[in-house]
Length: 135
View 1 (cartoon, rainbow, N blue to C red):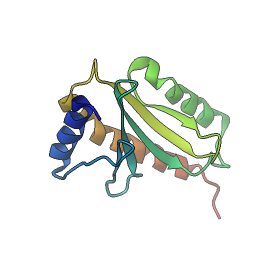
View 2 (view 1 turned 120 degrees about the vertical axis):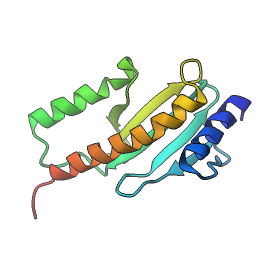
View 3 (view 1 turned 90 degrees about the vertical axis):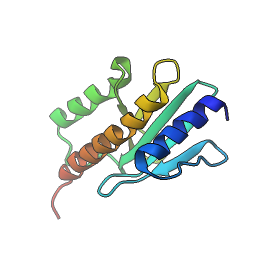
View 4 (view 1 turned 30 degrees about the vertical axis):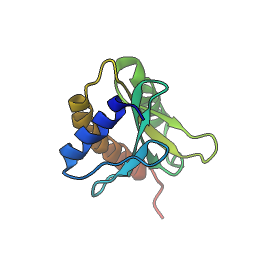
């Protein structure tokens, strides 16, 4: 791992008051009450930090056309330096993600972005759960 990704993990640990130590693959998981776990990964080859969270196990059965349009709007997020959303083709899970390049994101910016991402993941997860048909 390069010094730059280590600085991002160090800043993240300071933000949360813990040691954010990546595993051998350069990743760690951050969890907050009521929010899906967020995988924080250093991608040194692409010179960026990556955040991802499974916000639903699958697309809810109750998703209406307008809900799908909202999800498609979120999917364009990376074009506007915002998180994006997609469906994992293997598991069918709905994944919120963010790509934070080293060139435009300082370690301090990154440490501030992670709690914001956690909040967004919580909100999207809750919204998708509300679309599930009642039992």
